[in-house]
Amino acid sequence: MPELVRYRIDEQGAAWVTLDDPRTRNALSDELLDELLAALETARADDDVRVVVLESSHERIFSSGGNLKAFADDRPPIVKYAGLDRFPRLFKLIAALGKPVLCAAGGDVLAGAFGLALACDLVVAKESARFGCPEINVGAFPFMISALIYRNVGRMKANELMMLGDTVSAAEAADLGVVNKVVPDAEFDETVQTWAHRVAGKSPLLMKLGKDALDATRDLDLGKALDVLQAQLALAFTTEDLVEGVRAFREKREPVWRQR
Image 1: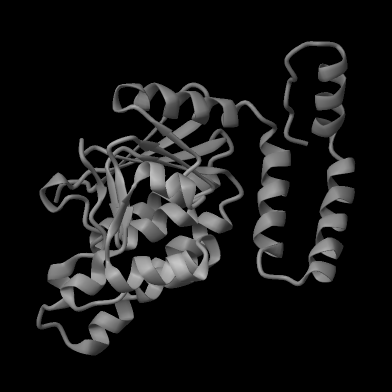
Image 2 (image 1 turned 90 degrees about the vertical axis):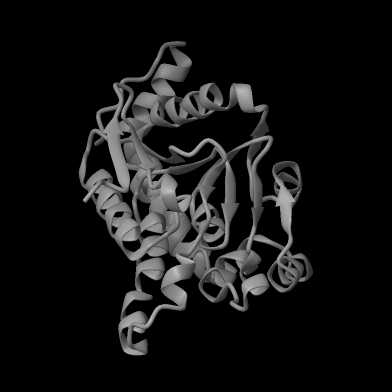
């Protein structure tokens, strides 16, 4: 069986996780999701990895979303239900990865893949890419990703996306706040690499503490969130990397992160 997800690490500590099933436009099949989960677990366990980049080998499609053929196949309902945990596990894993995840939207980001992009920490998109959840157009609904859409898009616009099934341009997605940067197609690869390496140059330890704090406080009320954040800040004060970062700034040199 061919690999559906490719994995490599560059010299700057960026792990490039590439969706590589062009025959299905990178449909998020059970097999592809299993390989994607495994790749992310590998990145989480590797201390040399400082940032993860999710990308596609397809020139025009990041991912077409869930595998429509599987929706209507003749597998018993209980078998289909058992496989539905892959999306929640994927979104939770990205949140708890302890390392930033950048979605390189080099093509259309549709349906379940829209949720995948929203689960990431940063999104850089080609100018030609489109975003949306067109499931309703084929008699389905974006059930699983609606939780992510509602946490990232205003309610009325979120309803429009899910109930009309229209896609939006990368520029419109940026206006909605779900894309960080839109770049001309010709500049896309260079921009993604620049962003990935900029993130990789930060303290991995402080980045982990920060991302863990964001994950822990995402849905807490203000008082409880501030308690957690105070504890995380106190923990950060005990690290050598914080001292090194301040010292390097004052001495006008590049910091040397020791991850302790």
